[in-house]
Length: 123
Image (cartoon, rainbow, N blue to C red):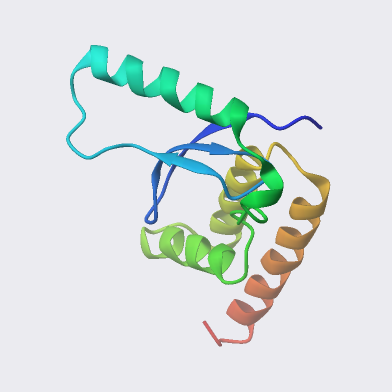
């Protein structure tokens, strides 16, 4: 699969990123002018085309350790049943990772572990 430019927004960063490596182009704070936003998007696209994935290390995926449980726990705290929270978190991560089979398989294991821990009263 070819690399592509994606928009990310989480606790760490908001801006453009590469799907295959850790490269990102963070959104400057207080950027509100539509023309400035358009210029930012053009700059990000140009820098994305020129970057070398090998120089930026591996991408940190939404399926990384601990992230799934945190997502599911937030949904449970909002009032979702654990089984529904797991399904929603699974769907979100699959969508965010473009249904990457390796990540989806890993996250499914995390989901099963989360439900097991809930059933055993550990969470």
